[in-house]
Amino acid sequence: MFGLALYGTAHCHLCEAAESVLRATGVVAEKIDIMETPALLARYGERIPVLRRRDTQAELSWPFDASAVRLFCAEA
Image (tube, rainbow, N blue to C red; front, side, top):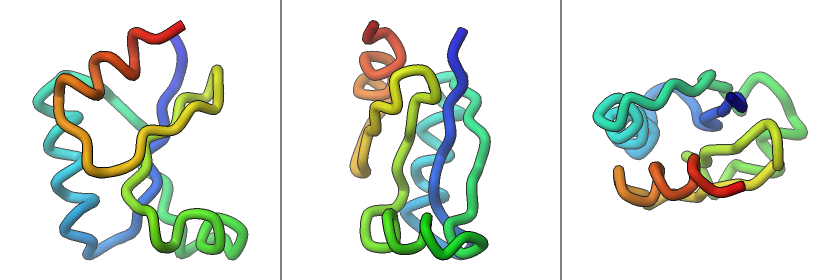
């Protein structure tokens, strides 16, 4: 199984919504706070939340729902 990262930041209502979608689908992702790394802030600052696969580096940008997350995780 591949790993997932959810890029976001604290006190972000969209990030909280994305976390709820992941919980509802049973998907576990490591939460990465973009505020802690200038390069991540520059890359994702206006796009969070973003779900990223560690194996393929593919990204799923918000908004996404449970169906989109399942499809994203099933892609080879």
